[in-house]
Length: 291
Ligand code: CLF
Ligand code: SF4
Image 1: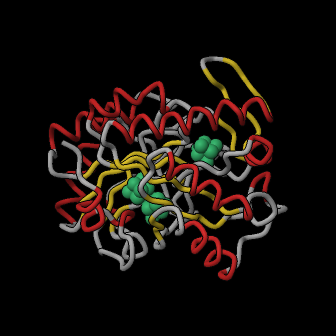
Image 2: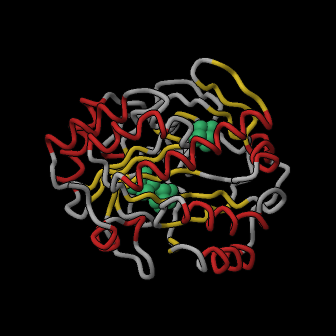
């Protein structure tokens, strides 16, 4: 039995509609690889950058169980165990394996997975079978012309697709996947990166469309201008507020996003305890991100 939307609003920090609920989450960096190439994504292994796609280390599903045990002992308010990268949670099998172990060891903790949605339709049945409570799908556009400016390419079932063709496949799979997992009872939140020069006017249409496909919550994430989108601007408060208000006519809107690292731990925006849980980085930087 997965958690209800009402219980997530009280117990999941990223489902608090309205005031913060001051619950904590532990991110488990078990997913190193990605199957798409977002133009804003800057992935790396380090302990200083404070944005999605960054972790101190990559851990195994078995190590993740021990990290949760330690995190709960250190910090009683952790209610959610999530996988948010540093790559895509469905691009490698480690996240689903981790959640199966978590369900056995910690049946009361809320399980949360974040994905770009390329493989969501393929894994919808397994996600339902594992009993993941909340799923975040990052949907940055539902128009392939716009999406093609945000994501350069995808690798789907072993084949590389670029530009418009890649965007069409990604959007189709995201929407069909959201519909399928929502129907199966999983709570779906959609994250949309707000990019003033590319999708600002389009974000309300994304909100309307994902709501029609079953998503229950929408989170607008301001762009961090980096990598191939370093030429774009970070949206200002006025644009963020206006876009959130427009989106809210279609779907509940989450307003407390902290653009977390893939190894974040504690209450989002509060004291982070990840330094006490993860080792210092040992691997070299690569390019690439998530929320
Ligand atoms: Fe982590 Fe994401 Fe789950 Fe939350 S974060 S996988 S839904 S438990 Fe939350 Fe962090 Fe924003 Fe993500 S504040 S970046 S929305
Ligand atoms: Fe992959 Fe996420 Fe980076 Fe996009 S933002 S390339 S989905 S890791």
